Image (cartoon, rainbow, N blue to C red; front, side, top):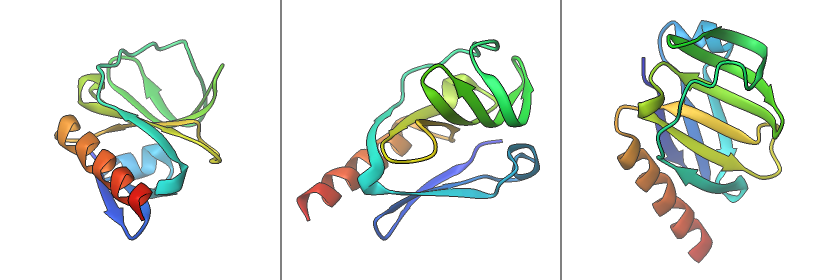
Length: 122
């Protein structure tokens, strides 16, 4: 199940839907746009043993939801299909990255980049 990414005021909001709310142990994540350093729509892979699950659910090739610890720091995943995910890199946040599945990753990445551009112009 894909999530929704939207811009509200000067925040980036990740909304989680359906059973993933329970599996990820949260309904949404709100990040100030000022804390977003980049967004990528590059394809991902499962890398099942690259992170330690802290809270959430993980079944390789099926689902990865919740908080995971990597060598780079704390990551948040909402992923069923890695090819539909965007990766948002953060500064000054609990999570170093949010890997989030959306319906149209190119569109979602563009929305975030446009909001970052608009935010930087103000």
